Length: 179
Image (cartoon, rainbow, N blue to C red; front, side, top):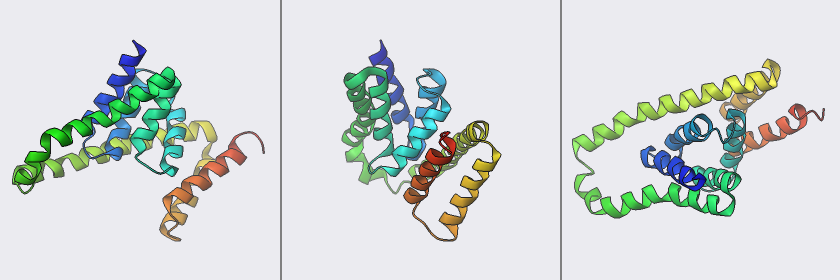
């Protein structure tokens, strides 16, 4: 039964996640944290941060890790297949129609109408991460990390991967109880 749950959680999230990784992350979070309770929001946020600094598609990295944690190697393989299958099926089935309808007004409207929904989903996820961070690390560390990240990204144009890596190091030093 656990393998079916792993498959359905990742298949449905990636089937409905129009637009790739950014749109699937809130859907995966809803399944993994909200529906199945396989991890807490804080654990999901940590996984999301680590997956962001590694190369490759974020949804597959997260699926592989979560699948392995829940069901071992078979769980990892099932989660990866469930993550990749919706896109593979869509490409195979819709490839012949892609060129024919890509300039259709209805397709362009559909694409534009999905973008605000994705923005809202990511905004809700960011808000949940903010609340979790505030509860777990306190306002001082939250402000240091948030303002430091903003300055690094906007003023100094530091690559986001380095900002995430620095934030992980900061958390490891100042929030792990070592200091």
